Length: 470
Image 1 (cartoon, one colour):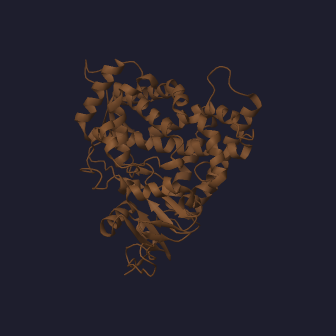
Image 2: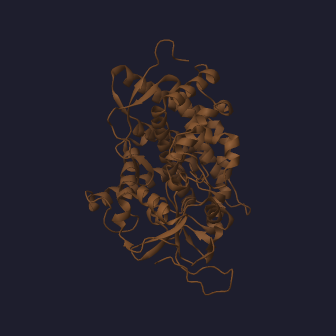
Image 3: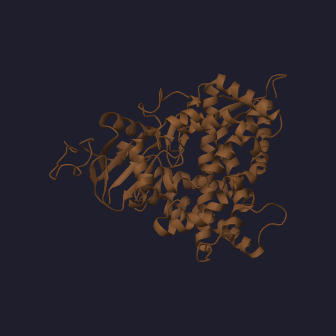
């Protein structure tokens, strides 16, 4: 059987064989029909270190916290993003920004960009975040009064795009017309239907030529908009009527040699942060309100916390330590539905995982979806239980059992921004409205670029009953 040990070295030396897994070569379509179910079944049948073969390549699958920590943290320099599915999908769009670069180039970029994303700096944007959320809540109140259904996932995407663009660029991308949001949709649709390499779409109903044309046009549009904004800021300097934004922080950053980010580097960083920074947070918010709708007792407890802490006023960064349950609900939602559901690396050098020799060039995948449901780590893993994220519960878990933002030195630079934004937006909206799922509308996770509700998240908004508003 493939994966059976063939051990000819001295005692204690690594086993030279692929891990256990299906014997047959699997077609891409076999996996893409339901990748979440495929990975769940693979781990259940073959264990925490297993493999499968597709298109002639053996892919290792890691589903244990200590092995995840080894790849993402302890020996991260032996693992690269080059040649991974993420690289194929994202580099043509984003260039070599923080999400796609490696080695010394990545280390330099991270050092230059990190100060802009320190928690204290992020908290300066709290009013920007809540002002945008107030506008969204007002729109949903009008929908409530008119009895209209709302597409929550779409509205959260528009909201988070507005927030990240304003915080990063000091720009309202609505000024670019409806084109920016449409371009983002076309890019996500293209990447979601392809496996990241030239070929045919994974969805048999998709027109590959049309998808590619729209992707190319969207890519050109986004590059021009971002290039214009960066060039304008270099010319005009920082704004004088508002606090400096994250672009100013990156423009002013210098490395140990006194060098700044170049125009191409800035372009790639900005595009990476706009694209990655709004999509994942929108999905986190969508899954959180969906789960709160399914668990009304927890939703009531969240509203009680908001009433006690905020007394009807908009939340601010200073309130975050007291919005403990609200934050834990977000964290538990992205445990169950991690927006980034797959992490991939290639071995840049030979390594050893759990006593098995990993040859240089091996593709290894980690799935937060399966890791966050590991029954040896999470009691009743399918249940929504925000108490998993109390300080005591966190301390009892192994490191890298929870990786919605990745782990190790390459942990998402925007983690603090995303969590701050999600909690403040959620607190703003839930003070004013109750969101209920549309009866009969299916909410099924679909693993594309991010983990999204396959058929969208349709809900109705309801004002609290008389006396019910904080």
